[in-house]
Length: 112
Length: 115
Image (cartoon, rainbow over the protein chains, first blue to last red):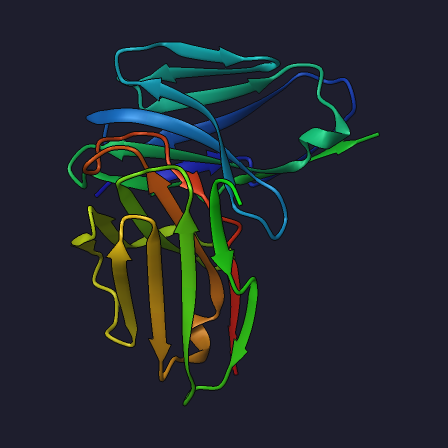
């Protein structure tokens, strides 16, 4: 059974810092991995999608990497801003379940 | 309206009530999904519809009854719910015909409280 774990559960950093969010998954036979952002009381917004054949994807200040063999992904946020404060969710698709399986998320607070 | 919309945004209901959640997508997608998000738990997939046909029921109790009259609309009918059903219910849609791993676009959710 695919399990997705995100560490840390919560993170608080001062504005301007670079930071890394971690995601690990137990079944490496995935089709892709996605990072989402969720603001309080709102739905999810897709940030980056990495296909299993890719090693990383970049969008603006965000860079996501994927190491499928070790079951890990990281989301790197450069020069963090208070507007980056949200919950970041990692989700993997594929493997034995053939579903989108989510982690519990990392709650990020960027202090001005 | 653009993207994925959900109504109502908040709902409080008693255990004996019957209510419905509505989702509408304006993206021309072919697949729609219902998810449940409980506090401190990962999002749980409930149902998947492709071209109005249900292709996934993730062992959801029968007190939740989905309906998909067309590719743009998805409903979740609720009856005799339990307090533990209180959660954020999220609707999503994607382009692909089936669970092809396409990016899913989410609505803002309905915050449901069962008294």
